[in-house]
Length: 408
Ligand code: DCT
Ligand code: MG
Image 1 (cartoon, rainbow, N blue to C red):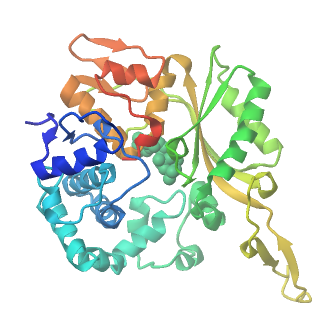
Image 2: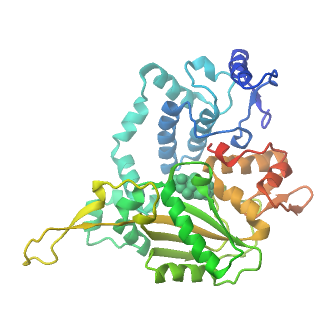
C-alpha cells in the first residue's frame, strides 16, 4: 500500500538487525525502510557510492531530457541506496526494498557484474550530454541556453566566449569571468570566513539579527558549490536592510556580482506547488571576493600564482608574477521573518531529495502542504505555527531527522 513503509525481506532484516544489535543490547524493533527520504537517516557515509554515482549521472540526464518519471525513479533509487547501512553486494539484497524498478535494477546488476555501467560510459562520451554539462557549469547558464548553444554548433566554452553573435546576460558575464573559482568547490574554512564577514556587517546594522549557515554545510558537507545563509531579526527588519549589507560589501571591495530578488507577497497557490518552486523571501545571489588570508588552514598552492600578461602588444614582454590572493565565492543571502524561520531553515537545509520527499509525504500521508513559509492543514484549514524544526517534524508525526542525516 502506498505510504506504508515496505517490509523488507527476511534475510535482509537479519542483516540490518545484526548491524543495529552491535550498537544496542536491546533487540531492535522490526526494521522497515520507508519509500520517503524524510523517514530515513542518510549521513554522508554513503556505502553504495559505486551505484549512486552511476545512477545520479543517469538521473541528471533524464532531468536534462525532461523525462520527469525516469528522473524521479532514478533520484529515489539513488537516495534510498544512500540511506542503507550496508553495501549492496548481490541482487537479492534489493528484494523487498522500495524505490527500485526494472531500469534501476538493471544498472545495479551490471555494476555488480562488470564494475561499471555501459549506459553511464556511453553517456559520458555523448556529445550532447557533454555540452550540456559544460555549458550549465557556467553561473547563469541554464538548460535552455545550453541547448541553444549546442544547437548552434558550439562545443567548447572558448568558442562560446569568442562568438561575436552571442549576447550574454550580466550573470553569464560574471559566470565566465570567475568560472574557475566558482567551479572550484567552496571549502568549509572558506564558508566560515564568509560567515565571519557577513555576520560582522549584519551585526553592525542589527545587533540582534541572527545569521545561520544552511544548505550543504549545515548537513555536514566539507565542500559545496555555494554558501547559503538565512538572516532573521527579532524586530521587524527595515526593508532596505539587505541593500545596506550589499552596499557595505561593495564599499569594502568584496562585491564582484549581485542579483537582488525582492520579496513577493502574491497569494500562494497552495495546491499546485511544485517541489522546487522558490520561496517568496527577499534574497540576494552574490559573488564575493574572499581574501585568502582570511581562510584558516589554507593550503598555498602554485595555482594561486599566475603570470601577468603584458598590457600592450608593443611593450617589452616583461614577465611579472602576481599572486591572486582572493577567490570568487557564490553566496546566497535570504531574509526571513522570525515567524517563518523554522520553515525556511528546514527548506534551505536540503538536500533537494530530502525536501522533495518531505513535501510528497506531507501531501500524500498527512493531507497537508509544506513549503519554506509554513505548513497548512487541508482538513482543518489552518496554518500550523512552529518555532523549531523539531516542532515541524512533530506536526508531521515524523521522527526528528538531524541535519547531517538529511543527505538523501
Ligand atoms: N533547494 C530546494 N530546491 C531547489 C533548490 C534548493 O529545496 N530547487 C534547497 C535544498 C538545498 C538548499 O535549498 C540550498 O540549495 P543548494 O545550495 O543548491 O544545495 P546544497 O545542498 O547546499 O548543495 P551545495 O553543497 O552544492 O551548495
Ligand atoms: Mg549550497
